[in-house]
Image 1 (cartoon, helix red, strand yellow):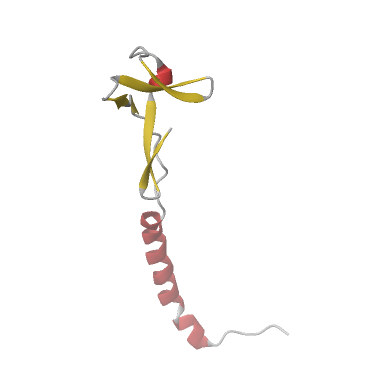
Image 2 (cartoon, rainbow, N blue to C red; image 1 turned 90 degrees about the vertical axis):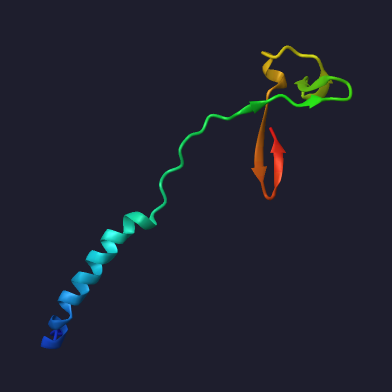
Length: 87
């Protein structure tokens, strides 16, 4: 048996359509914008006491005097869980 809708339910239709319209217009503001790609900012980490720089060689971190253009001495500082991560 098919249930029939009473006439009072049809009176709610404009209210429901209005609510859906408001929701549809507010929805784009609730969806976060896609993340934009940022180019990382590289730094060189200097040991002031010995006047040397942190660099990576053979999967080990070392101090030395690599050239400023040497990418093994370029690091990215990243905020993570309340601290700073060096990559």
